[in-house]
Image (cartoon, rainbow, N blue to C red):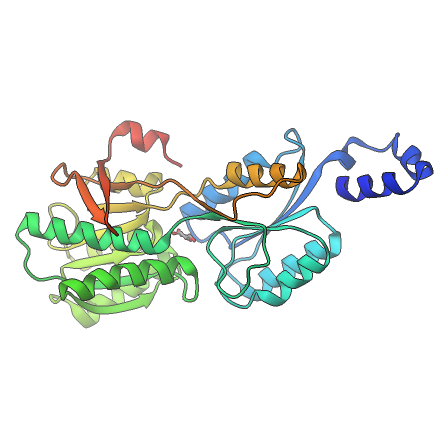
Length: 336
Ligand code: AHR
């Protein structure tokens, strides 16, 4: 463990001499990463991003824990990292609350914590956060839907929302952002339930929505691509048409490769990106901390909004003009 080694070397010459023949592994920066789970394509890309950056060749020893969407497992993983005295801890918090105690323990152990993707609402005991503005994503979805419905001559919006994991900042932000526009425009949100960011969850919620609301809805908002894939299966099975040529406008978030393929084919009308490739920015934070510098505490990922049809070039979100990008082969190929 490199950090501990440096301290001890400064303490005694004898001990530093004993380190001369030590294995190269002792020079690696050890990182514990408590990942949410493996619920989605997005999550796979996020894990891969960290595993690509924090390699031994790059000077890191990455301890990875898949917490399987279980908050207790995630807290335990962080405490195990403290026990192992890793140099840094990365957390993608499953839910946004319940963190102050364990982050205090990290602080007392002198281990800097970097939060990625989802936010923590009840503690600021971390060095930096790198992720997405989920409320902006939800607002963008609403602003696009408003302009799109106008362009298509659709006067009434009756929407069903399939949310992400309850208590996650990703679900909270997207729900609040979309709701704000729905309230402003007087749209009806018939129902909004937790699909847990999974394909199975999306399919099950959509099946139950079809039983309760068949014939009453013309928009389905899925808070990630995998939920959208499940919702598509459920609507196909029920004979409900969706997408660009269908009766139901289908909207998704994430814009992973498979999601964009469905935008390109017209099955999904619009997909609001959530960029999972945070690891290079996390590495920059770690290198700044290593150099004794103070990193930016809030780092937003760059994100794009994708559509099938070339009819709306820009939308205005929170006063800022943002582009709508038509999906091409090149975009799909370059995506994660
Ligand atoms: O926190 C990011 C969200 O979590 C992504 O939208 C979703 O796919 C993932 O599971």
